[in-house]
Image 1: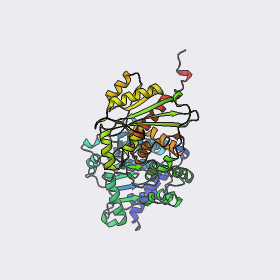
Image 2 (image 1 turned 135 degrees about the vertical axis):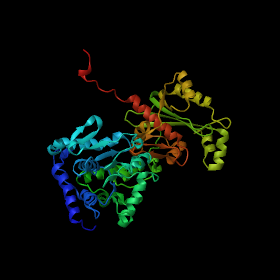
Image 3 (image 1 turned 45 degrees about the horizontal axis):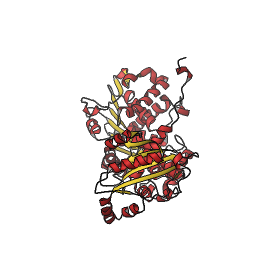
Image 4 (image 1 turned 90 degrees about the vertical axis):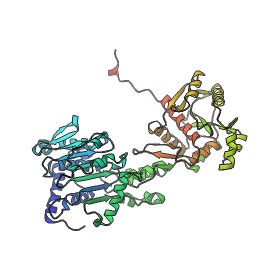
Length: 519
């Protein structure tokens, strides 16, 4: 990088002085201590504030910084927000914080507000108004404010600085496009986004990521654009390089300060045992753009849980999940029971229309007819699944086993659910979104890896386990994805629902404190 001009060096040093002499950390072990900039933060401040045009204005008008989590992104962005509000020599500065929603944008605001309260110097000049998520500098008639969720409809914003947090989580580009030119009337506006890698190659974040890579490789592409990306090599997930401390440090410039090597190594060991956790590790810890879907349960891991079912099964309590596919393919009913030692036994049942089973065997080389012959799948007459047969079979199972509850997709099979309820069976709706599915998915993953379940190598369920892919959201939550999986996964979906129903039913009641009791 070329040296800064004399005026640019002075402006860069002014920012450093603000961070290190005026700001104070507000959380954790560094609470109350000065904000000492790390080398990567010095680089950002030097380029954003010290690189000037010939007329003395800032060269960079758009900035894109991409880092893994736990690098101090929030505190860095909060500090920049306060500087741009009150110390950038801009009368009437309007500084806005934006994110995928107002709550996410509020993370930076709360950090900034805490910094103001922690610094006697800032407290004298800035007023914090929590009810409006606004920080005001009355002397210059300036403010920093969190934008509402519908800010893309707003007009008339005269933006001095726009700070985007976690750009990868933007659901669409409306907010970005609406605010992109909001600083046209300003002398030196700045749009700055700080984010972790995502997975959507059609998003505004990927667009900015790709453009940043071009500008980093050749600064003449767009001198007004500043790009800064810390990440492991894109192919890190396809080899063992992601397990090395060298790659960890390459992607994590705050290693040793905001996150320890020991903590990182523990996360890496956990990721090594699970494809879905590896996907999250690559994104959140190594800043590698991944795909949304991930192959989940390895055949070797699943096979290790293939021991016969254990104990007097008829005397145990069972919880089940029912996943009804389309009327032309497999439907699944999977029961689970927890043994006294904490392990689980898994008992699956399947139904398929007989006519379609023959067609699928010939067309897709899936051994439906062999599974029917060997008793692993029940064939119903015709080319459509007969739900009356499924109802009858579940009632027979309820006579043989102590089935406490059945989870069923609340948006599907409402008629069958009502009929089973009428038969005296406790049926509960079970959501298919991340909120309901993530926890039992994690449980199934842990059970498989630790060999704490038995499924007796049921061939249909094992086939489905090999097919299943999980889908991940921006928060790292997971759920089985029928669209992304290679073949049918209804049995695994039913198993996840069964585990979820069991966990809810057997969770200990929350303790009641004495001060809440009426004596």
